[in-house]
Length: 481
Image (cartoon, rainbow, N blue to C red; front, top):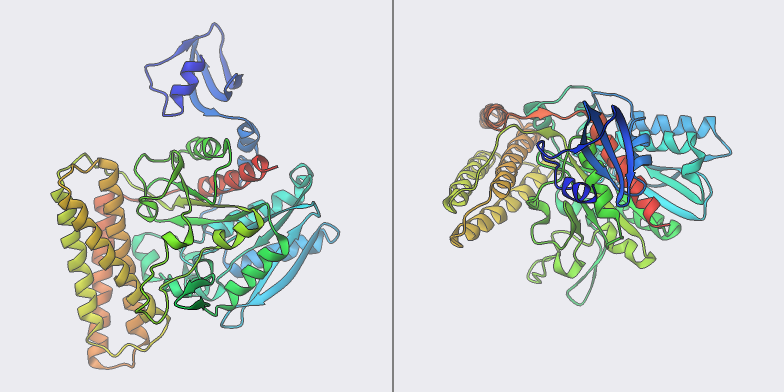
């Protein structure tokens, strides 16, 4: 049976079974850990393998409520305030700073244990699943004292409330690919609080001057957290996790928690972490900042800075980024010749060129959308070059790698079209601007509909996404005691 449990970590084959004389459904403890099993007609089918504390993680995850829409930042802050009001001896709500636009950054603290845990919601404004996870975890900490044993929990509901305000339609409309990108905003990297910690530049240190980043840094230095969890979500693909360093047993628990909720990790590395050290299936280690930040000293300033995890490392913090997808895709990709990357590169370059041509016809003001479009187009250029280099290797492309490339193409082309449409809306009105805006609206709709059909994309249940993120946070805290 130990051999069966080891094998089932990769996905237990349907034709592999152990035989038992009884009918039963539940959890059995093997020497390697816990396994959720199902007995029918004398047959034991191992559904998934859970190691160590995962049995308890499953119990907590089952408490996640059903919901279709993520809460808005305002709704989330109101919920946290209500927790503080109802449990004044246990909870404390305070302001730690303000955003560039003057919006308050609030933190809810629950418990007074010596070990601190920081949970950050909304690290990017286009990744709102964490709002629902913060709401769930904060309520769970209030209701379950055993989870506060020696631990104080601190919840920053949203680190970029200015950006979140530009995606507010997501909290009131059921989203598909068109709606999500018609109201899409993700700031340029130099304006993202989680990725703008100071870095060496030239003969000194470059600081980005974002009040939200500075407030986050001060909070980390105050708490010196044992664990910091930054809640991310992507558009497509399998979930994955990024950790600041290895913790024995953590990678296995993260993979098991994702599989338990129907979201197994993938063999191929997602585009964001290609080439990063791997700690286990679907789990990657954040590289040192000097390996990430572009050292082009001909530039006046770096495109982005150090990450939260680099700053928190001075306190020995385990920083964990659980990344969950919002859509499931039904299209399968098979191993293909290297020319597949050339075809994708040409298509993405043409799509980016059309957006550039359209916005070039208008005098876009230097507003948040225009800067975000320019930044995303620069990323697109980098991706195109990397695909061309990949095709030049002459090596076959595994299906998983090809799938990630298709997801990246859809993501980038919809982001640029969506934010360009919003940027055009900010331009001084003229006949040309109106024509460009109409063309961008049509372009976005057509690309979104085509992508939805080609990928057979369907929204994943929010409850499952929250459960994976919550399990990741709980497992990290348990394993760093």
